[in-house]
Image 1 (cartoon, rainbow, N blue to C red):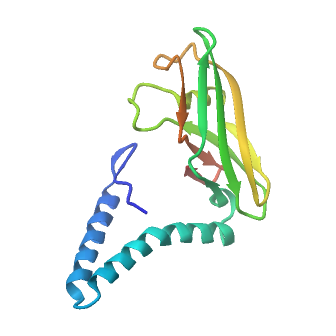
Image 2 (cartoon, one colour):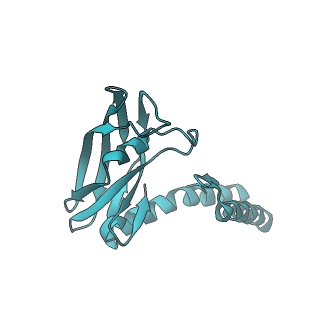
Amino acid sequence: MSFPITEADGYNPIAIVGSVLFIVAMVLLVKGLEKYRFRAVVITAFVYTVMPLLLVFVYQETLARGIDAISYYGNGTCDFESESEESMNGECTLNLHNRSGRPVTFEIEFLDSFYMKKDIRLVSLMNVNGPYSITLQPNSKEIIQLEELLDVSHIENRVGGGSSMDVHFKISDGKKTRIL
């Protein structure tokens, strides 16, 4: 587990404060213990690393409803191939897991990585034909495959083709939105 210091909008002040507080807590833990300092620090770091993942898993398996019960492990891919000056083939594959006991319907909007230059579009080109409505069956892992012929004649800053891994996207059910 780590605090996301930077995101698409710049620095995240809450994450910076959280990181500073964690470091202060570790220093106070070391100074406050006479005996077993090393063990306490190692155990605390291990619990800090494992506990959030475990809590998310338990929450999604038991209490989560709707899009909160959707898991994505960051293993999606998108491939783009230029057909002509005006069109491009786009193909995205996403592995999603619905952990709830009910079907979940949502719309997907693709997001470009914030590590790319601001004015160049790649993965978000899939939004030309979107948003895409998807329904996942209860307690199922599904591979979502989207293949589209995209009209990119009106898009100025785009790539001629390429691939992207670790695809990020936004899901929305009309009431709530999550970025995965």
